[in-house]
Image (cartoon, rainbow over all chains, first blue to last red; front, side):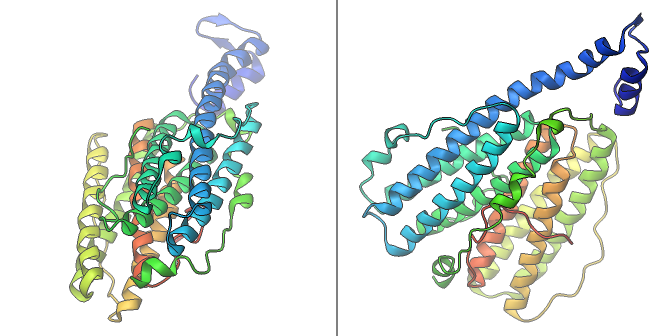
Amino acid sequence: VSDPVTRRAAVREGLALGGGVLAAGSVAALVTAPAARSQDEDVATLERLVELEQRAALAYREMAEGDLLEEEVRAAAELFADQEDEHVEALAAALADRGGRVPDPPAAADVEGLEDLSSQEEALELAIDLENALVRAYGEAAEAFEAPELIKTCAQILGSEGTHLVVARQQLGRDPVPEAFEEGESD
Amino acid sequence: MLSRRTFLRATGVTGGAALLAGCGTADEVLVEPRDPEDDVELLNDLLEIELAAASFYERAAEQLDGEAAEFAELFARQEREHADALTEAIEARDATPSEPDDEPDLPEDQDELLQAAADIENEAIFAMNDAVARLSDPELRRTVFTIVAVESEHLTVIRGELGEPQAPDSFAIGTPA
């Protein structure tokens, strides 16, 4: 019973399904079971995305508040921290809708390399690493999620991460768009 | 470079709260199955956008100067790669890929040309964000994600060339055609 109209009709009328006659409640359970599994998976994926966004926000904020960055780069780090916070906020709302819990905020020690930065170049390299991890995670989420609005929101956030990548690459004097397909890298 | 500095100005952070409601609710977890046959239509819509963008950049590269011309050449190649990937996906589904549309005239002024490029990227981002949410094939969704990220990157570069803030929004929403 693959199409939604037929599924709804089956639930409504308690029709035969797969050779056996099922009560409406039983049919409903069959219909919703895959979605319930998907919801658990969505929560895990969302928690992972929130963690990565939280780490990126923390890293940008620490960079902005430190003394390694030139003024224009510092301002960019401050802006990107705010933008990552907005991503966290959006994802947290979706997480709450699914009964999930927002992970505890990370500490600086949770972001590998953050406490060891000694130059602007290193800070920008770390920013690229964090953004690449986010890009990779959103690509995986695109495969995992089924809810259209959630996929769309993730695509919109992904675009923002692409923007951050370009700015960081340009500040390092690199090609801003080196590949035709932005796949990111695992963290 | 002017473009990389000016993004720090007027960087209004907008749109986040408004998007919260669009993030998927518990009701949406019960997702109705998508129809794989719709994938071909969606892919063809995106292919038309990519073909138009590639053509635009190929012609724009001949009119633009300096770094902007180099970016246009690069972006043309990348849009062609996107079009090739989409064509392959369409043909793998035993369907016929769309043909390119007629090529509109380009503005002669450099800034107008760059603004036209920004418009193309914004429209591509909007269309891709919409289409990717409706694709049934998870692998296709991932492929489109890798493409839409690059369109956003193109837009960021173009904004820099125009001397505009490069990262004005927390969410790359794009604009409807």
